[in-house]
Length: 255
Ligand SMILES: Cc1cc2nc3c(=O)[nH]c(=O)nc-3n(C[C@H](O)[C@H](O)[C@H](O)COP(=O)(O)OP(=O)(O)OC[C@H]3O[C@@H](n4cnc5c(N)ncnc54)[C@H](O)[C@@H]3O)c2cc1C
Image (cartoon, rainbow, N blue to C red):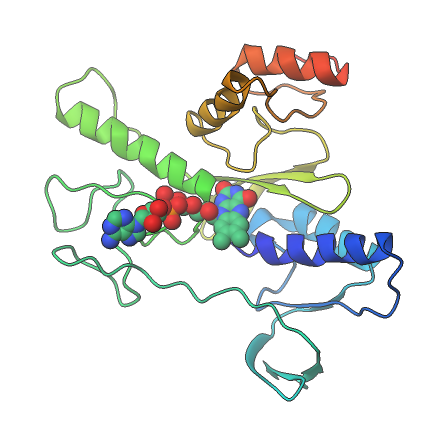
């Protein structure tokens, strides 16, 4: 997930500033035409401002191709001088034997998670050919597949095709940002960005069942789930977590 590169840049900048190291120059290179463009223009603007504030150079619409002798070759454009480069890996699918895969090794599925060309085989998550690889998206795909499987087994549920809603919690080295967008046609639409929680529990992995499960596991361990002040409507889920968080932060919680 490209957001990890932005988090690394922002958190490194916050860290070096805290340590009083002034000679570090940070650059972020991305093939995107705007920062985190999948999350929509408001998120791009917010991230651009954060990068500016931290003095991080942004190189858009560039693909790094090679790093040699302290020079990072960019396509298109001039090379960039750098002592160290952290690059995100190119994604490749698992190419599972006995199942179809696309040219990159990912399992092709329909909007109910049914593997194309198969009758009773379902898949969800990063191994599939979903355009966005993200934990929250994987959980939504799994919800759609579970409903289709249950309906196929005769349960009284209506299968609901997967309609991706991208929720990203961006760590910035100071106040995190919550970004939410409904994704259609490969781009973010109906976007929102906030420094307050836009979903509940306010976790990095936003899944209808997975996130409350993970938060409650913390609670069982006598640790309160991570909580942030909430001043807006959030979906009805996990009133216990809301109460715990409100108690901890002294926040009032909109219902
Ligand atoms: C640095 C980084 C930051 C991220 N941050 C976020 C974030 O903030 N929010 C978010 O929602 N997502 C984030 N993601 C993406 C998220 O981690 C993935 O989208 C998510 O884990 C996908 O879940 P999955 O179950 O499909 O696959 P995975 O979590 O990869 O699970 C697949 C499992 O299958 C196992 N496996 C693989 N092959 C086999 C085999 N042949 N037999 C048996 N087992 C096998 C693997 O060991 C693994 O345990 C981040 C990813 C990275 C790399």
